[in-house]
Length: 342
Ligand SMILES: NC(=O)c1ccc[n+]([C@@H]2O[C@H](COP(=O)([O-])OP(=O)(O)OC[C@H]3O[C@@H](n4cnc5c(N)ncnc54)[C@H](OP(=O)(O)O)[C@@H]3O)[C@@H](O)[C@H]2O)c1
Image (cartoon, rainbow, N blue to C red):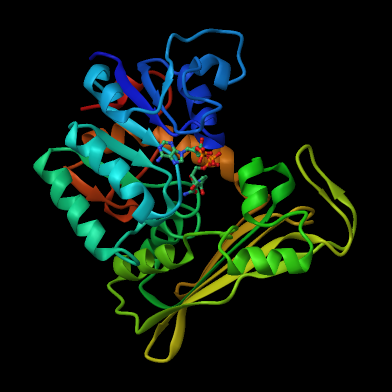
């Protein structure tokens, strides 16, 4: 088998980390890079990655040009969180007959908030015989796919609760900005109201995916307003300094309600200085399941891994828009990527 030919669509914090991981792998080749950031367009990808090595791939802001020359098998897409914004980007990729694995949070289960766009993407992907998947560590794995996988050992299920607590000090800068680290409370509230910071995107998608896997018909999904977490002590990381009284990050909760009972609840907390970091899943059922991963899985590193590991899975999958719950048992794609096909 030939090398897997990959175009990076978005070479920000995640796209750059994914590129570095791909460069270490056998059986893959980066054949194009797309971004709209003026600071990146026209530069060699090696420069964007902060390496001395020129890779001979110029970052382009012209997707049509890239796809007409690249003969790509798959696009690794990491631009924004919202499907309305990413939709035209993904449509253009599909029309070139190229598969997509994306970190767009709303694409992880687009039927939750954008069912019409999801149907259109599915139809278009089938017509062009390609597969489109939205994934990542969260949404995409920790608070949905892993939960669904754990339900497979239950005969009955009454209630599911998943909690993720992470210390954002070790995360990428765009994430620290997204959770408001370093702002004062009024700035935080104003930016949440004006949507200049979004908080975590994906709890609704994760709940809808779990419910769909269990064939639970939810009456509604409720998401609480995003709450700031206030720093008690001075916390400093490479990118952010937070003084006591300032916002260290945020917490968000969402619930799936069925017959007036809270059957799924997700509790997400991300702030600099979190003392205990963990991912926990509690399933009240027969049998009960109590699973805890401590410290929690590193979000950036885990996202790079899941996106890269799923390249063969996406390329082998049935054409259409797929979600994580539609895939067979997942595993790392270690070693030469070409060994994971067929
Ligand atoms: N599901 C998960 O678990 C997971 C995990 C990590 C990240 N994510 C999501 O993945 C996305 C990327 O994250 P990030 O940290 O890499 O963000 P980032 O650093 O802001 O990078 C995104 C890059 O894409 C560029 N871009 C934006 N719109 C574009 C377009 N229409 N065409 C081409 N390039 C475009 C941006 O340029 P400008 O800066 O000029 O806009 C930027 O260079 C975010 O939405 C993030 O929330 C999801």
